[in-house]
Length: 88
Image (cartoon, rainbow, N blue to C red):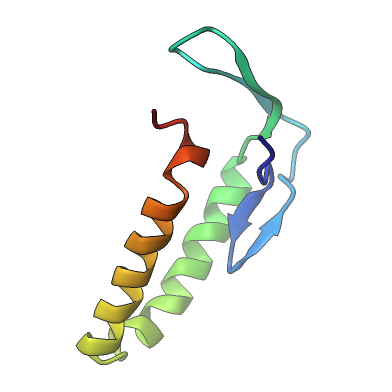
């Protein structure tokens, strides 16, 4: 299985501002899922929060029907890719 290891901030995948990484272990069988998952630093979190705050007015002003369609699409994508999240 391959997936993105970078941080998702402001609509794009970016590397962490530090070299910190985590080894992710599957609790079901003890196997290694990924050796080097990026870890967000405090600065990375601040950048992500700033981007989210900047995006909020646009989302808030989006009509409820359009927001609903977006959330349904998100749910469909989650369901279609559930196997990639380690769900049996």
